[in-house]
Length: 402
Image (cartoon, rainbow, N blue to C red):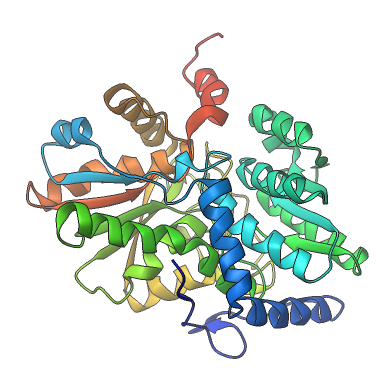
């Protein structure tokens, strides 16, 4: 594709309605403004776009396929279920779409040191991969809890030459890793570029990550029309910070007939206070430089999140999702740890596709939706990651010794 798809922006302050913006220390403002200016130039530069599209095709392996999950569809005896198979990307998830664009931008800006935060490890692996491709130093901040439950990805990052910084503060998960990455960015101003992995953070990150991930929805929209002759009735994706979901949703926003459905992590149950469903169980507040829905206590302090999935274990959500929630354009459901585990096993047995625990949350609601829509319905779900990284954690939860 040679056209420029990025023609929708938040307001001048980076706000989507009452969400987003830039709530950051004065020391960060010059870095963020420099980044914004560089991105505005790059995304309209035909040479930059052509370079990125070339690498998406030849290095990442795009376009990713759409696949009719026939046996799952028959199992639920309802709507036809299609997967957008972004788990087939190089590195095994959607994350590399965003990392590639940001690292190319870093090189354009003359930055030689790449830093990133990671939860499930997929963003860390993707960042380390692209940094290795261009010979750049890479440092990844990862919570100590996530290091333990995502050991395969930790080893992959080390093989790729990245330095892993364990974060022991807080709950030792994604939120804490992002805190440390932001501190590092301020400390190493001149040569460092911070590759944020989700559609959150201060402006321009939510817009930039959405723009880069929207390749998912642009491809899927054209593919499903080609295969089915019409648009889907619903697009479904899991949501932590929400980059894979906003990437799928964005090209369908003006298609009012298409329901947009995000699935948050309900953890051990929404009544347990051990979940990561910030839209379902949170209130607006400020975290990591933007205003959005957050899990917080009565005093406004950020509450601990929990999910069996390291990639969804985040107490906030991208600000554009908060906006879509409030205006009613998107629906946000949730799935528990147990429901995700059941969906993980069902998809593996019926389709021969081992999903990551993140999209297994979306799968947990697809069955309900298929029955609701009936056999004339059409569902498009983003299979945003593969489950190689999760097999040891799933075995432990299921009591299986390897």
